[in-house]
Length: 587
Picture 1 (cartoon, helix red, strand yellow):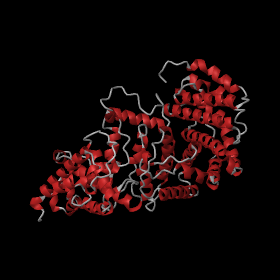
Picture 2 (cartoon, helix red, strand yellow; picture 1 turned 30 degrees about the vertical axis):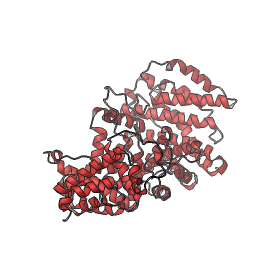
Picture 3 (cartoon, helix red, strand yellow; picture 1 turned 180 degrees about the vertical axis):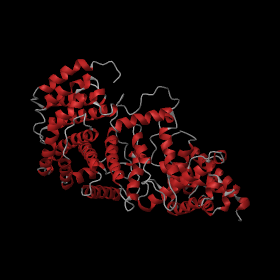
Picture 4 (tube, one colour; picture 1 turned 90 degrees about the vertical axis):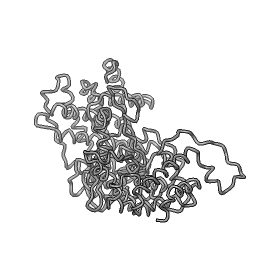
């Protein structure tokens, strides 16, 4: 928005193009892109002085709101963008028209000019849903999405209004009937099925790119986002809430069932645009569930939904992550414990760990909460130059974000610092373990057992004050029983994760094929890179030292050490463990 571009000079051309009656598909496409450009300009707070003329131009196009009227969809989306821009401006000015510059009076007045179109949406949308047939589902979803988006924006304007703003009253009963019609139709189930289909996958790299039309996926996500935003205005309605809650929970249960078992696929990473609309759809559903509360019965289902979403967030989604970690009722520890310190760790990393991360969070918040923008990019305009990308951005966290807390470093000096280091560290580790125990009991993280076992093993390296905590010991024992297995793939995944975590080398694996006459007893050794062996040896060495120093008195640490004595582990590692622990093996 700060660039010196001829926005003012192109407005007459855009208006002229939109005034014409399109006679073919090419002209319709040109008008569509003109409307897309106008929505972007309004998002930046530009072109607001042309709102009245734009609404006048659009009026004939939105008079008939039927699914076959393709350009009507884009004009209704433009109306929603105008309404959102008005909401942002009035929120900034404290909803006082007197404080808004004279040239921008058109925005506060837009609610009056749009009222007839809004009322038309409340009457035409139910008819559209009733006449929907299977062959025109996509066109009906597109029209319904734009209508719901406008209704939601107008409802927000009505809630923010004061006697000085003169926003026409939108009948709550008319909006309520719209939501009821959507709940009765099959479109919501259809859209939830698609937009929440990947909800319990841990990462985009584990998602197979099926032959599903991306257009339908994008439309379904847009419908879910628009509908959930409108439904949020009725979060206290005793009749609507149970119906919508049932529909959403059923969709989540079906998604969980489809993704119940960890399956390694060769799926390619999704395009960032596709990731974005799926994430926004999941976020709109999660936000609604958190607003209404789901109760203890379904908390683990929703917590697993949130945990998998956090692992797939990317740069630009900081506001979503901040919202999720702020949900105390969702991330609740079992027994008498709590996860406040665990959640505070992530909230602090997002907001106060550095000036750049705070700026990035504020920018992300404006992107998702319709604040005034300087940029539509996923990154903020930073005033300083960062030394490294990792220092500036906290996201993405990845599929193992909960497990990574267990494999972080806590030095003895930090543990015994005057600011309650050992207490905080114990609370963070206990919170992470408690969440893992709850997830594993109902909706396990879609991460292989070897990776989980490696991160769990790292707890044995923490100071003794943490290991002796009863809740930590109990959680470790419970999780060890779940992750421990005699499957050789567990060992292989354990070693791979150890190497990845150690970051000893960035060397790629050799593509040379093994010779057919390789000794089977040495096959496992040949499959390992030298760097992987070095990383594993260093890790085992640290474990042995802590075990000799204080870990040997704890049963769970002994269980972890016995893992390395199995035949599936490289002979070199087993030999190293026995030699280092030889003085106390008899104990």
